[in-house]
Image 1: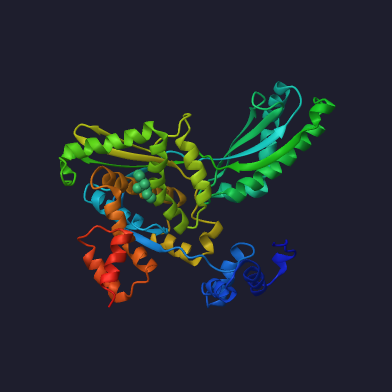
Image 2: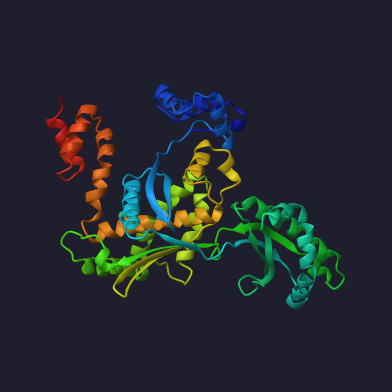
Length: 438
Ligand code: MEV
């Protein structure tokens, strides 16, 4: 049985690996080699990655692909996508071409507000607290001016401070609910720093104020933290074209395709099991760009799914309808992302991805990400209501299967040609390799 290790974080990287392989692996040499083969030879680059997190022992690669030809509001973008799933990048590129030929993607920003909350316990008269907070609000802003001055110069800062009485949920539970503008940064550190100072000042002012009883003065700050739910930080992307201008799908009239497409979206709006998978397809595009641009995909995922359930039932994030003989398809996403700060100035591939996108502002990037989500969703639904998803997916997955089966370069080449006209499956590829094992 394994025993706990003490002082692990103090060990050198080599010592950490030595302990890990000795205590967890049968073939220690192989385990060590696998981890070490991903080290970067260039010391400085490796050090940079080592410093991102704690106990770094190696690098975990994801492929970085690009999807070109995205026409967004008349401007062309090549979108970087970091993702392990085959067929996502191909689908994005295909959807970009499809809608590029039909007027392109239209986008807009519907809001940019971020949220932070101070959760606290106050045992006393709520009205008294409310009047007092109204009185000290300006002072609280002043108390964080050292943190907010620079952000204000860039057009951001604290937008509002509001007391929320949550005693119906939990006895004596109140919040100070703050709205922020963080311009081009995601703003997590900025928001959390402001909240922690304000929380301390709030506690102090209440303690010093004679209108409060001794019990009321005992305010307990439970926690101060931003919210990853950002329903007022929204980008919208849409496409539309006359049904007549849609591509001809095999075995379906253009009208029938448009109707089937809308029906598929309606199913995702009404039916949570389908909605989750539908939205997962959207997130294939979203996360890939969020990761490539060094943003926090966990924050985006959490916020997006909360938004999808904002009316009490989990539902589709995208909408489609037919009006005046045109197909309309749109997506709204809450996205707290940034193009400055965090990894954006540190990770060379993140910097590269942002340059590829033409150094977007956070608002630009929100729109690009939403387009990536809409494009991915279009590609998935288009396949699902026509040929089915597996045909295209398995074609793209072919190389993974060939690699799994240790195909030689010559076998791979022959297989790619053969499976252009034959259905791909694991067993079909295995049979092919057996017959072509020269
Ligand atoms: C697979 O990664 C994503 C899809 O399942 C999305 C969908 O069903 O809409 C194809």
